[in-house]
Length: 114
Image 1 (cartoon, rainbow, N blue to C red):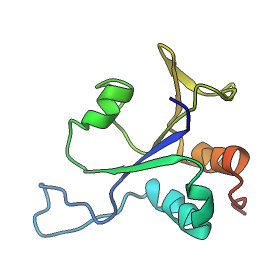
Image 2 (cartoon, rainbow, N blue to C red):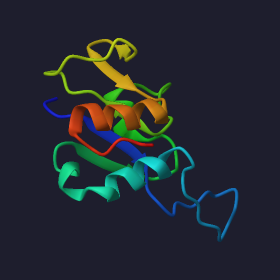
Image 3 (tube, rainbow, N blue to C red):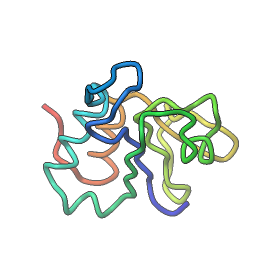
């Protein structure tokens, strides 16, 4: 992998347990806001928005079936990973939403969250 990959739930997703209702991810919403604040920076990473339903094949393929929670930032193999990154095999990733925001600032130049 040559770029960071940010995996988010698609905004306005449906949950079959609540027919007719639409939802946004409380952890992904601040990240979506940061992405919207500077669209030109989004081009520096890959962003995929995934359906709510599991299994989330993209996540399973990247990580495994036990790590399907979103958001997740899968880190580029070519850049140094932060010390607090989780590891599965060769794959390094971050799941804490606040830390993802910090890494988007550090690695991609987005404005800092105040």
